[in-house]
Length: 345
Image (cartoon, rainbow, N blue to C red; front, side, top):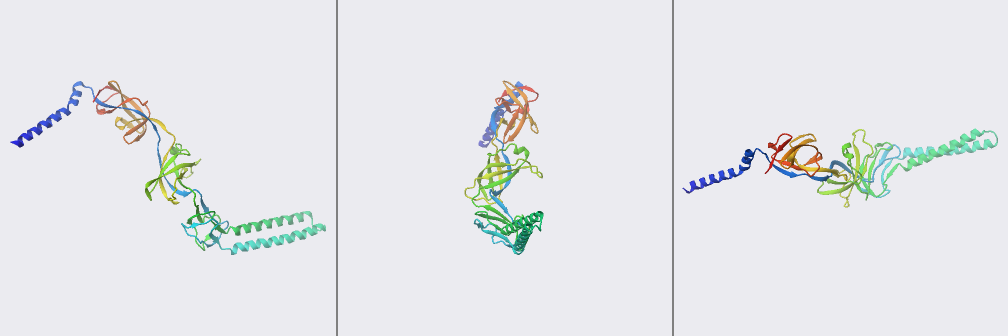
């Protein structure tokens, strides 16, 4: 008996709640006026974020090479080794270079003798002025050849341009090294770190030197490094069509290593004045064009808008709204046409 009473009571409560929830709909059906929910539009100063990835490097990073070609004799350092200024990093076998230097010095001695002989003959009117001038020119040329040979001999070694770190060794002993080929990649100690990335033309026009950036690295997942845009390329890369930018990274603890890959979020200083409305207000959209309903008193009017961006549950509108309008955000399924009478929930 008690169970029967409980079941009847539960059924009565169900129909009571159902009847209460159906009242607005019944009211709408009786009046024929759609019931809607409204929300105010608002103006925002929007700053878009630009996302990219880049590679870390020392701000003072050098690719050191030999002045002349030759066989690598010795590389007494290893990658990752800390070195001091003027410390030997690599050297060539000197036999050939010394032989060329000696040959140039011998040529200089001969040129001196020839010049003195022609000078004496000129005094005796045996040699002409042209002979004397030619001998002097030959002497000067051989002197320059000696200076060049001595310079090459001096630069047959690579020495550290300052206190720093050997980032990479690009050759091995007994290998042939071409003149100008990078042999040692070197980073000056104490130099700040930069991260280099490339942006499309659409993004680079939003960026300016001085803009702030946040950078994350996989080795430090809970750490955000702050950065500042310091350089923006004036022309696009002919291959990729993108623009290189450089960002100084604030890394006082020297935790970052050259070659780290970072995820960059650039925050441009340029802001756009946009109107913000809920995504729920949108009744139709095609790319960046859309339609919504704007409420004025008891009437909703269809309005064309231009969509700048969708962020979360918000639409950012660049054209079509002033920012003070009342927007229909609920009950849109009951609206049709360019204008329609409405009532509020």
